[in-house]
Length: 128
Image: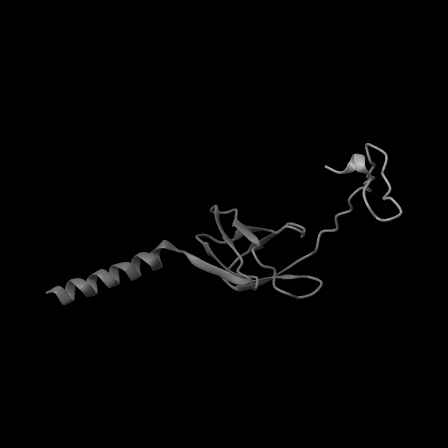
């Protein structure tokens, strides 16, 4: 009797998973210039609000409950991208590096600089 209950429990679990309609999106995110995998990229399935992060090699797995689904892909140093997929196929995403131009910075001293004495010692009034 316990054997039948065990089989029924396993069949129920399999049926529940099959009927839930979940699929697994998987793939890799890589740099569009170098082709190397990008670690720790954020992927957000906007259709059902689930998310995932890539591993050290840029590989990911993301649950999807319905298709088509919209996935936003973002990483520091790269342009954010959004894709729409119709099926749970293996996906290869290539992110473009973001070019960041920073303004020039000028560093100024608040007090005049002091020179070392000819023998390389600090002036007495500078010593603590």
